[in-house]
Length: 335
Ligand SMILES: NC(=O)c1ccc[n+]([C@@H]2O[C@H](COP(=O)([O-])OP(=O)(O)OC[C@H]3O[C@@H](n4cnc5c(N)ncnc54)[C@H](O)[C@@H]3O)[C@@H](O)[C@H]2O)c1
Picture 1 (cartoon, rainbow, N blue to C red):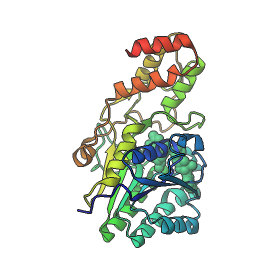
Picture 2 (cartoon, rainbow, N blue to C red):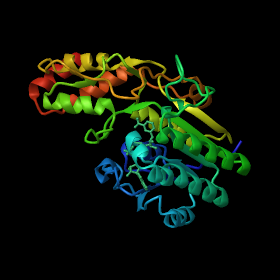
Picture 3 (tube, rainbow, N blue to C red):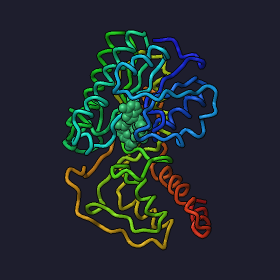
Picture 4 (cartoon, protein in one colour):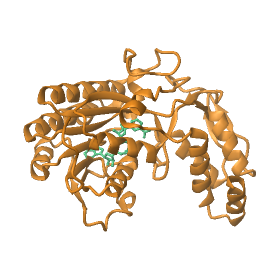
């Protein structure tokens, strides 16, 4: 056991201005913790922090984690009680195109964080890992005891980071939780990136009244987990009082096909042209679904059922499209 974290203690969040990071900061402030966010704003945006920027318990350090001297200095100045590490190069193709940068941000920064935290006596670290560590070698629901088999450098870096953190925590008697996020969706996911989540792209096209584009036959499945649930899982792991070194999926355990999401959107926006099917992309994983039991057992983590969470998100996202007729229809459908 480690002492439970007083609500006044500081939690440091790397990647605080990103899609998931901004929700984690909000969730932490709901549980009364002081939060220091660190970000270089490469993909993160200040607008993502609009709900917390005026909160006196929150402050931001604009720092690049690949500047190892500056990053160590921030950790030493803040001396947080817990760290939630989310900053990363999140684009899978970009990680393959620039392996050196992938190494610096997705591996070396984790090493600097782990070793500096151990020196400072930080007892709790949570890291954003990914379902990408599993690759495409397994059938059925993916559980944490399966042999990892990443397809590219991004997944490999996440796997190495898990091991770096786990060893540092075990040696130092600290708690490290490596959370393997599946397909996260929700507000503030940036659709402009060519590699951003399929849902944010679909919503963007739906808002513009343009046909959805689907690669392959659309029967590929994903385990879509809501960003609020992911934020709750991160905070639960960061605040727990067990000194545990663990890897756990953050997922719903349900598969949803791209075609069924397209149908949901079509129902909400009936004037939308039929989806356009393009050739399947190389290395596109056909089925992806996680087993959520471990996170449920340890942290009581339960994600919202995906159909309900997806419906709520789509109604909210497409409802703000500006067309009053759309809004009426969406809210009638949601009722
Ligand atoms: N979104 C998903 O579906 C998903 C799935 C699995 C894992 N993850 C992981 O979750 C974490 C958060 O992802 P996200 O979707 O919120 O992405 P995001 O791009 O919105 O957030 C990443 C944040 O890290 C910051 N950052 C990047 N490089 C940095 C650097 N060198 N120094 C300081 N800050 C830096 C960015 O500016 C951004 O604010 C990442 O570690 C990602 O690998 C995300």
